[in-house]
Each structure stands twice: as C-alpha cells, then as structure tokens.
Length: 200
Image (cartoon, rainbow, N blue to C red; front, side, top):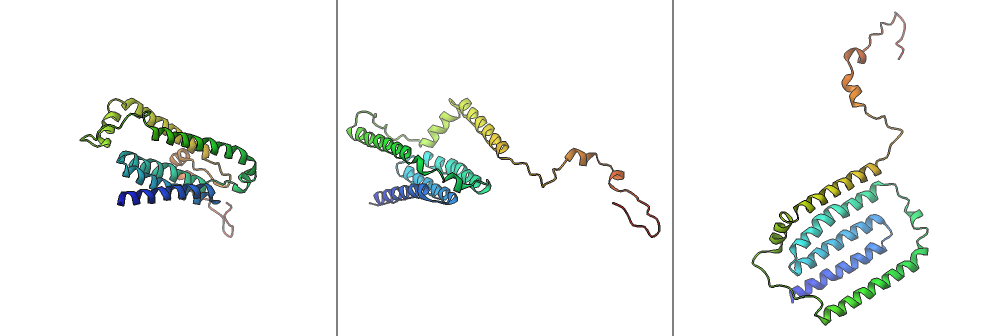
C-alpha cells in the first residue's frame, strides 16, 4: 500500500512540476520547478530499484545542469519580453509536436501491455546495479568515459568564453606590468618650491 501511495505522490508531483515549468512566466521559477521535477523523477527511479539512475539524475541534472540554467538565466541580461513577443506564431508547430509525442506514448503503452516486444527482465543479481555499472564503466568503457569528460570540459570552457563580456568602464589588470614595476617607477620625488603645489 505504501509503495503505491509513494508512486502516485511522486508521479503527481512530476507531472505538476512539468506543467509549472512550461507554464511559469518567470524563467527563474521555471528552472526551480524543473529541479523539483528532477527530484521527484529520482524518487520514481528509487521505487523501481534503479538507484544509480536516481543518484545520476540528482547529481548530474539537479547539481549541474539545472543549477547552470539557473545561473545563466539570472546572470545574463536577456530581454524575455522580446523573446515572448513572437510566441503566438509557434503555437501550431508546438501543438503538432505535442500530438506526435502523445501518439508515440500511446503506442508505446499499447506495445508494452501487449508484451513480447521487450525481453523479460533478468532475475535480481546478488550485486547492485551500481557495482555492475561501475565495473563496466571503468574497465570496458574507460576510454569512452574519459573522452566524454574531455568533451564536457571543452564545452564548459567554450561556454565561459562565449558568455564573457568586455566592459569598457573597468580598467583591466596588467599582471606582467605590475610584476616589472620598480620602486623608482612607483614613487617620484617632485621637490616642489616654497609656496608651490604639486602637479599631478
């Protein structure tokens, strides 16, 4: 009884959070609703015994992707009123795409209920799926895993370079010039005369 109640609770919160993510007018609120949807989806993964996917959803999506979206939305000077100006003309395309996705979900549920298309799940092994996935990831797929890390690093550096803006009202710091500066270049004895001021 309790697992069924928890499942319907998480599923309801996932659907409600998804609707609020799309329907919220404030982009910061949309990202926060998206984070809530990720947390509840992780709870659904825990209910079916896929703890690796649940932790991956929290660590990668909530801890990195969603927080990155939040910082990008909050830090960039985006004119959201201008972006929403031509929103109405995309309604037909969005509605057609929603119908296609709904049809795919409908046929997928029918195929799942009919059976025979997906092989039966193997019996539960003595080891957890995290241990098995970890062994495969760091033995057979180690090079692919490292390559994916390098690609993500390059993408992160490229995003930082593209988002960096040059400001004209701030004097840049010239580190090499500061290191080369000598004491006689910093302090100058003007020796002003009696009754005269110092010209700067």
